[in-house]
Image: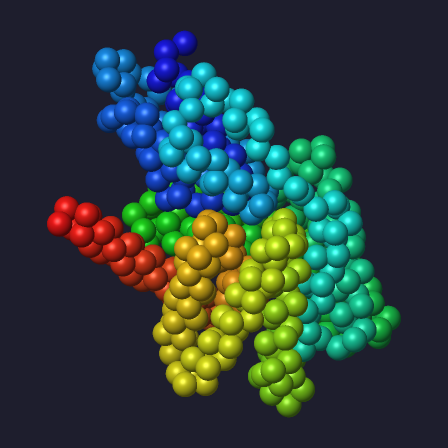
Length: 426
């Protein structure tokens, strides 16, 4: 094998594993280009998508080579992403022998939490989200019951490699049937608070945000593919709910849809009477900690990741109070501070910013709005379709906040580099 073959094989596998672990396409492209240039390759081309890696390059002897491979479904593991990112910097700095590169990648082992720790993370996160929706104790109890069942279904269907769309439909069918059954038994007052909270277990929140970010950052093709995947996955969740309605059609009238959601919204609008802003901040801290465990962020980084969600919630509340009629603006500002917090920690701790960004945006992910809009489209309900503009404004605002912060950080780094170069020349 030529040296270029070893380098591109390494880049191909590294890029694939980074995408699976949760890296965005921009980061993967930059990493591959940096490694190729470090080894003297030129004419490097990256045409990567979230579903496929495609790279090509030439060496000093003008030998051309290319590599392509499919990317399996994403399984967020930010600890592994951190180690893959660290490996990429070690390779570019030390330039080990090309033939040893595959061995270096095989040595990357992430300290994954055992399944029961991940389950506890889900339990904590779902309980906190339910309380944020102002769920009552009985409803939180059913949310937790559903969380255990959803976790079991997810592990079972993942082992047999069932498509995500089928997994979502089956999971939401079971979740909805349980919530509706306890509603009919008068154990809970509102089954939609249970269903919407548990939907966050299934809704692809991170890909939803990333697809909007890609559309704004010039990765239109990848953004469109991710958007279609998100739409299909959310539609499958709604399909599971619709199937539960069909099974209980004789006992549960579809006319309960609007009143249940209106009651839930009324609870949230009156949240200040029941849940103080301080409590909401604490709930967000615990929810972000729970999701950090789910994302496999290890103990030494977990406090910083969880604190990010709390800080973003504080800014979100402050901006919302100051600009209540401008959702786009206060969401964008909150997203900006989420990205800024992540970039600061990435610089000080020398870790990838994604490690702290994903838990920080937990308060911003508009999963409930996406669920409402999908319900409105399926049932042709104009009241629910009206949530569409709020959903779009939220996604665009989050993406714009990310892009604005990334742009500023990029030029600050560039200015420091140019200044350092000038000083060394003098």
